[in-house]
Image (tube, rainbow, N blue to C red):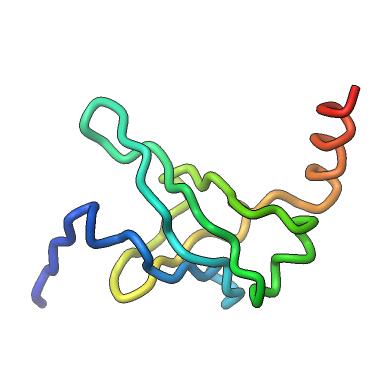
Length: 96
């Protein structure tokens, strides 16, 4: 087995999918704290099945702990995507 090591700069533009096969979007950048990846900033794709679920949000921050694999694509845990109810609550709280 050959282990391929990626530079963080090589992850920009990679496609992201959930472990259930839903297309999410593309990595914009990695958020690094103390020389470790803390989270990933993701641009939500308009053709993503999650675009309407996320109420048209343009981006999302995925904590690194939800990343399952990084290779040709990035696979994340489905739980990293907030439920529609959570998104509505966050929106309502920000409007107050």
